[in-house]
Length: 226
Image 1 (cartoon, rainbow, N blue to C red):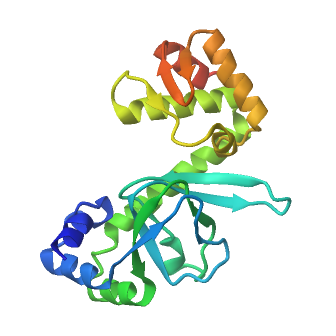
Image 2 (cartoon, rainbow, N blue to C red; image 1 turned 45 degrees about the horizontal axis):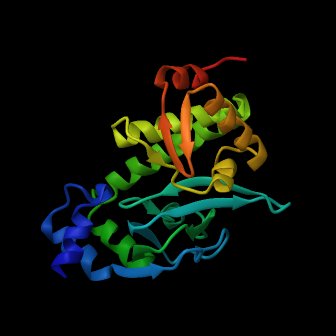
């Protein structure tokens, strides 16, 4: 019980909650484990609650009528998903799938909404998170519509570099094929863009490991205008 309370209190969406609020969340939370490749919920499926990642990585996707996958988000520890359906529509607006063996906390819909009705301040951090996610999605749509693949890729690599806050090599968090879908590109186009960066000595690659050799060059590529 204490371990679960500590896990919840460490989540950014529940930052600043009182002990009483945390205890209330502990009483309704349920830990769920998912194997790599497991579907957590499907687009259009009835929402019976939402999740927060404890460990592992989850991808959120939309599938077109022609079967093409578009990755919207890659989520890691501490990040919630499925929460939009709590307040709007009652069904999940996208599909969630475990990219690797993952553990999540599940918060059932009705008990959670009852807690929120008793303490309206509780969802503020969650709403702030949703707002950030919407800004990220808007930026992603803008990038796909207005930028070429090399620019999108450069921006994504800069994001990964800045996330780790060091100049050390980092691993691509998802396979190249899925990265292509995330960036709105074909796997072949992505491979050519990566090869060009290597040829220009902007990055070096060994398998999934990426080393940024020329950060300024990467910035220039990310902001290039056509």
